[in-house]
Length: 151
Image 1 (cartoon, rainbow, N blue to C red):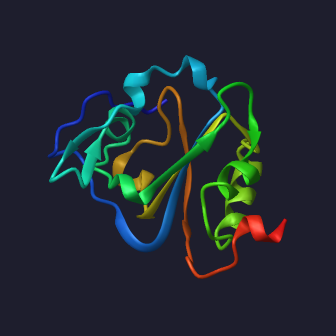
Image 2: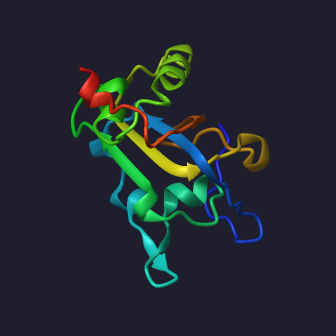
């Protein structure tokens, strides 16, 4: 498992890219993930943040307003439901579900969507940490139909 506990800014990367969404998932029981993993340290007038998760994946920072998370406090939830409840667009779902099926991640305890980011394992060298796994970066069209409207 590739893991980086505390990275320095010189080792971190910016992955911002329009019309992309990067997705991480977990099958680890949510109740067992320490609060510190998600606790954000804000800077730049509270527009940017870092936390243990972003440190592990070598993200220089993330913009909290570009992040959506969802999951189950106990057990797991279908990834389609988890993603659909925190995205207004279905544009990336076919590719996400294909990747999730390939990686046996159709049932998840938690999902993280980082919009306007194209995370790169090739650049960072990190595919997973102790709690989450990077599934992929997908094309995202905010104007496409809502996943929840299709149900």
